[in-house]
Length: 212
Image (tube, rainbow, N blue to C red):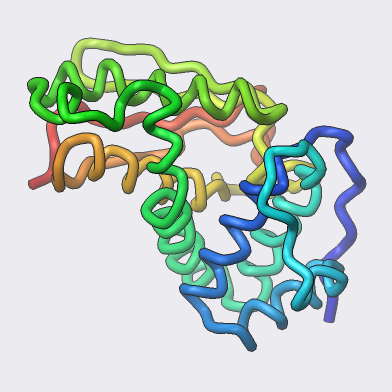
């Protein structure tokens, strides 16, 4: 059974981000589970033919969104949410942290900075990477007790409609990013706005105080 097709967006992630996400999903749910998701998403052409490992902008936001819609359809809202969170963490843990060097947050001088300073530098640096290499525009705002990470043109929910926020992969990615930047602390990340429910942007609130 396939999910309803999401019209192509003409907005793109680099192939590398598509590859990272598909590899992360395979890591989380196994080869057979991934193939079932690709079939359900109408993306069977990616089975055993993953996107190339380059920064060419060719992985359509509609395909990225379809992966997540299929995940929720196959495993149910609760199961799909858990798998998407794990996949988002795996996306960052397995690959995106390697982009840190590009943003100047990967060297030893960064690692010895106080936690608030590391977050103040690291979070905008990650947003800048997404803005520079993809059609996803990300912005970070700092408030007294929290950060707000806003995604304009979000690929996680492109073309989807829901009664609740659905960008769990982005939530998991931000959770893992904060864990890496902070040296192992967990932070509470909540998606408070989502285009899928009718908001103009997707916005994630991250509390400054770690959970542990």
